[in-house]
Image (cartoon, rainbow, N blue to C red):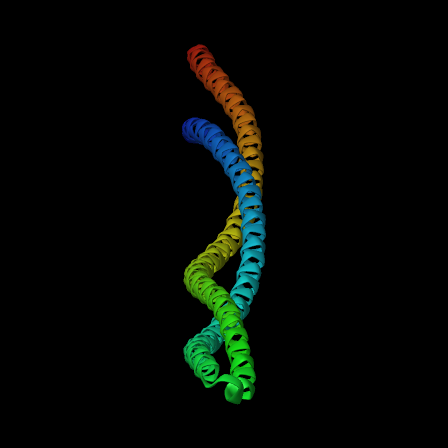
Length: 314
């Protein structure tokens, strides 16, 4: 009987220890649940931040793609401008060549007009000398009297032709001067046009150089934009992986939270069962104590009865 009571007390002590462990486990489970809930909240915040970042990356990618399209359009325009500048440069060079040819021809015309003026001077000089000779012949014919009358008529005609030649030479000389002046003005205008073509060629060359620099800068910008687009694409892929991992982690945290909740409920049930066992062991212990008291009481009664019976022994 005493051994059974001792075993009951040992069971009671073990149940108390188990109940303490279960209470500690329940408290720890509660702390774990709180921690998991905080982690789940942080994961939700992370998921929202990653989703927002994904949207920003998508918007940035769209902007970069639009910028690349604009760069390609500008590059195409610059290339067309370059082609037009090359055509304009060729036309300007051709025009300059034509002007130089015109200048050469004008120089020849100037030289020819100079020769004509020199020839006209010779004609004018001959006419003057002829006129002088005609006058001398007329004087000699007059001195000859009737014998020189025929010669006088010829001398008069020669003088008349000489005067006409002199007048015509004067007119030709005036016209040649006007022509020479016009040619010189044309030559000056041609030189100005040639100088203007030189300026145009210089401007075209400057525009061509600027176009080349612009084209080079646009190409560098395009390469940089392609690199940015590639980086954004990689960032987008990484963000999607992080987003998927965050979602998976959130799902795992939710399942872990549910498992801990189930464990907590199981611990509560075990604690209640242990409380029931504790109550039963306490009741059994009380019963054993009552039995022990009854045994002691019965033993005393038995001793008393034995003593009383012993008195009647013969």
